[in-house]
Length: 432
Image (tube, rainbow, N blue to C red):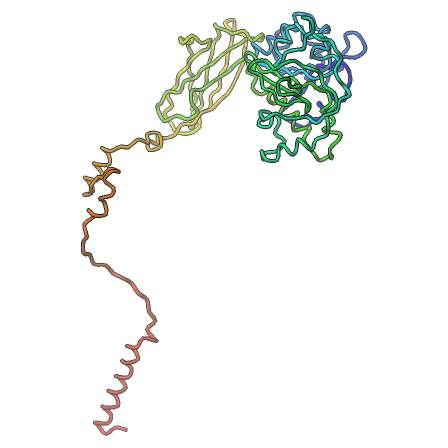
């Protein structure tokens, strides 16, 4: 993130991503001294010590670039062209923020950066407009239908709540006038005074080459932090989702793709590998080695060959013979032995579930089952005859009924009978 001067948007953008372990924001702030920059988030003392990266190699190690309010003349033509190729060839993300020195106001009309943007810059008499940005216009950001559905702008997991949460956010202040959206771009948010045929675009994004680009024509999203209760996370959520969209899909120098995630035993697993150097040019003479660890812990090395399907990739094949989780590690070296990269993946092998993978009617199998079991196979058109053709057979069955003996009438009668026999016997023998 390169910024031309200290401003609130810079401060609160950095603060918004603090604490997110999945985002590492490295910022470069120009100071008042020539060739002096305030660096934050760097990994070592030499990183960005000379300012914006001068080479493709230095620039291409990042996943996304943010231009703040910094004029185009700060960069030379090669640096701007490298930035274009960072998006189109390397597959990185690019975001330009609003400000006094952004967009047409910063002199970006006719530069390589204008090609990246998802919007056109306003022109007057064939030249890029240089009118000052409107900084004092307060307005409520209006999301388009596409914006309300876009993952970047989801402030709640419940879609029904999202629009209401945006309405609760404080007004923005100021914006850079932009031109029309380019073909293929998505307009996410506009000024509320926009006209249907002439929207005042505030936020838009697009795919560009292998990467993606976005514009946010304001520098006042910090109002969403300062104007809301301290426990509200809308500002943080917006910026974290924006940076993830910009950066997380950026390809690595070494990319591994499996044709499937799940296989059955002995089915071929195809591994496709793309290799690029530090400038993200394809490497066609790399040495690729894949080490597969089986569920039982054995390791197998898989050889790779150059693809014959016209793609710039290497292809390897493996036939798993165990069920369970397989781990794949791929290492790439150049022809002279230089290390190019390492990546990992995994796939799962399970027994075939034919009833799920082949759901069509197996009439022959059903007929054989019916014949063996002494039954009959019925097609669905014959189902109405099923009830009439079922044979009625007599059969015996047992029924178990539990009763208490002490209160059964039979027991009472048996007791009376025994007492009567005793009485009769005693009378007949003259016993008292």
